[in-house]
Length: 101
Image 1 (spheres, helix red, strand yellow):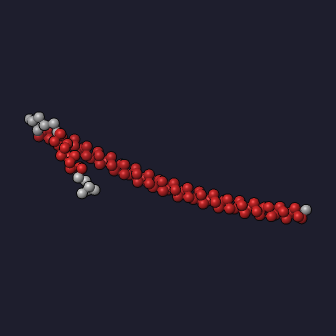
Image 2 (cartoon, helix red, strand yellow; image 1 turned 60 degrees about the vertical axis):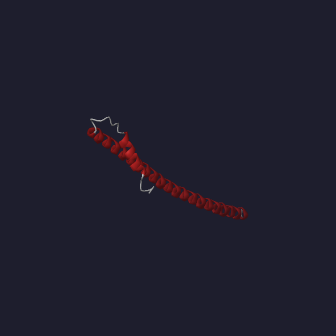
Image 3 (cartoon, helix red, strand yellow; image 1 turned 135 degrees about the horizontal axis):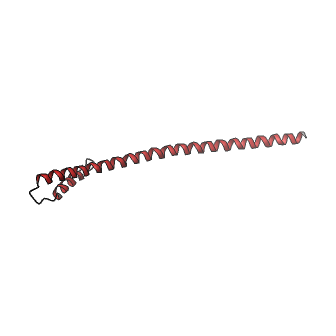
């Protein structure tokens, strides 16, 4: 009986040590996953912000085109202007963005 008790205690210590190692390993993995998710969310947020800014700029360009076309149509109501010259001028101006200069 005493030897069985000692063997059981030794087995219990060994399995407890193994369990503790596994808990530590799983905890580390979970922490890495949490950190990775936080980074993914941060990068996705930056991507969404960049997309929103891009589409806002495109909307502004289209509004400028529409406003410029409308004002040119009013000014040139007696001519056969189609507004393509205005579009070309605006396109040329928008292609000279600060990043390209």
